[in-house]
Length: 97
Image: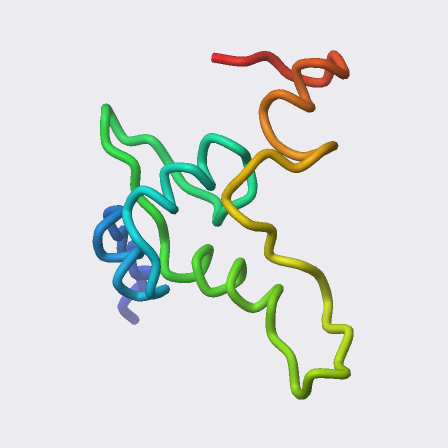
């Protein structure tokens, strides 16, 4: 019996994710800076995303109608009080790298 090997996740670079979401590269960079965007990984000097992480982030904004409250809010690519690197640093929960 052959062992099943789980497929490796496919990693996408910033330009691919930007096209997928319909936003600019710079918008994704700002989301990374402010901690408001999809989860990402740093592999060496490269920033990469998995399709699953991008989809999960986008699904936070999923709505059925304009009156649907949804599961959460996708914040604009700007500082949000209580979110992101600076909030973690100021509260002592993390450090800014």
